[in-house]
Length: 437
Ligand code: IFM
Image 1: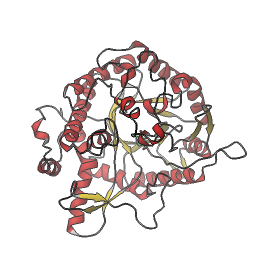
Image 2 (image 1 turned 90 degrees about the vertical axis):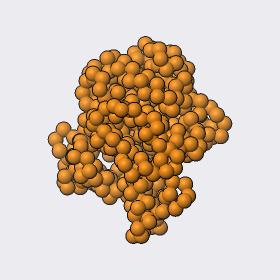
Image 3 (image 1 turned 45 degrees about the vertical axis):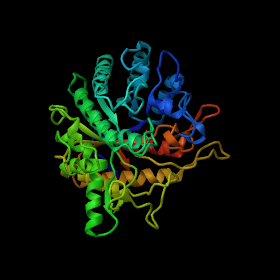
Image 4 (image 1 turned 30 degrees about the horizontal axis):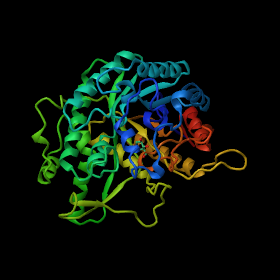
């Protein structure tokens, strides 16, 4: 039996736009993701989050199910455009929904961990505007005041995705392609707003969730190794350093500037306000293997796949040791900062079996291997304090719409019936035992 330290937090995670639906109810305003999803060609099958899992109307029974399955922590996001429909005016009905959700969780003994920005920026705002950082600070203060019992706050989810997938690759809202200067500006406003929010009075701990990719060179060549250092800077250090060290990594500042994206053109003194995060939320799905592509794109590329390495039905490599490496690296390079795995999980093409159940042995195996990898990291000194599986239930997987199922609970979208998969029971058992066999 591999046991985790006492008090280790086991939970599940979701995000507002991916599950809530009720897109035009009780005063909710449009977010950039509503606009993006409603623009033809952006999402597989033209799917949108208009209805999603209808969680807005099923919140009570969803939390009951969570409790029945034995989950102890729930990471969810508050919908920014539900709380601030026009970006500047509070919608009390939006706040009230989250009040009810927190009350319900607490009544069931489930710890609420709130993410403030899981990408649903009010349509009236843009991260390219410096002012949006201040609007985020106000929104954070509103939520801190409204929900003083919440023990764990996360400012942003995966700012790399917002900046680089939204403004460089163009596959996420608002769908801008190839504007590196805008992407870097967006990343700076996100980091700056993290500091603004973290400095406001709040209950409990505050941190930020990052999509972190342990990165390995494709070969031992100097070029591939140098490209890997930069690529690691691009996905990882660009976000870790400002939060934990109060500055951007110098090699990346120079690299972005050489590509016409100089952060010093819009950074102002005090923007990063000194180190301020009680923990880092690490989202781990897969590694990246990097090779140099001099003069092309950013100067590196991700090697598609390594022969023989198994993948999930998302096509992502299954590499549990990447999680061990990542957790140890965070401890080593960032002063043993406390870490929560705020997302880890897998897509499989689940089906309802003739017995009415959803059997997902591959997901159980995926989670089991990653829990073992996390335990190894703790044994070797990592300061890991909790682990949230992505996701509580199947949901709107952004550009992939409803075609990719990450849930521990199956959602039949036609009827909104929830069916706990075998992996949900596995996760409940891991929680109860505080470990795995
Ligand atoms: O579904 C997403 C989530 O919203 C952010 N992290 C990655 C998940 C899987 O792609």
